[in-house]
Length: 403
Image 1 (cartoon, rainbow, N blue to C red):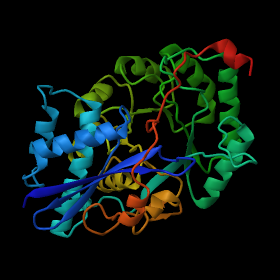
Image 2: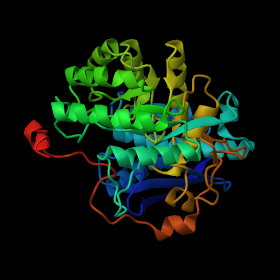
Image 3: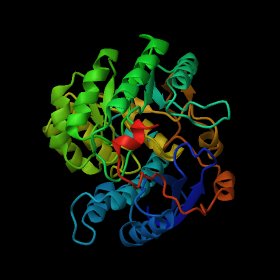
């Protein structure tokens, strides 16, 4: 069996762009006609640049090769250009192509991928979602605690047993910073209102985005501990695990991290330094399904759990489902609400979500298929913005205090 063809798609998402401004999908096909799909979660460059990278990697390291040989493919990508170190964009490209290889492998074997990487452990997968509170004009509003509480109650009534939100304010290219007393108070009030709304029927997840300096994260954590969050996510920027470990040592809240990390090497660094006990790999960036399985196994040694991150399209979600189903130390995974809307429209059949849980598909490969008519009608993305962006100005306490 040999991989022969590649197609790429930069899919523009509709407003309010839940899951990012666009999704980078790809398909590869073998000479015998088996099609596999994948998704690249790479936000550092414009998607047109990323697509050129996908084509280059495909031509160099995958075309003409057997899709079963994922270890060879990983090692050649990881070593490309005399590197042999974590490279976020290369690993994003590799991840999308590798999950497409696994899709082909599963289809050829007529089995879901989870049956080929250890076998089914979980019949259902607990899921959480971000709060997406809207005001009377239908605009997203992440600052009003009452709107947040209303959104939390609605999601809990749908069946969610965990919800996530970020009360800590803007994340900047100049983070981590020391947040203001007013922002500390707002974060505490917001968290209190959510806990009052959901009681003990729902876990709350503090989903910060590396905004904070370690000392500021510790100050915030002390205020939030009384609300018993399930985790404190990425409290400091992801570049230095020993700094995150300072926070983990000083708080009772479990620390979670991983959406901006890639390969087993970066995750091992987090675990050996006791920086986090909940590991949030993103399957469209981490280095592939096999690499993610290795990371989950390393985490198992440390009695850490995995909680796959997802703020992109449904192909990446399908890969997370395959990994999670076969992983003993799975905790929970991120949903985009209940997988309706555009996440469902781009598929021929939506992800099966029921009463707070994702039900793994028994279909072969990734268990999903793209609706290429919808994909092509929403491609290519013509905007200039990246998938996600950070505030390009520094954080100033007096700016926020005056609001």
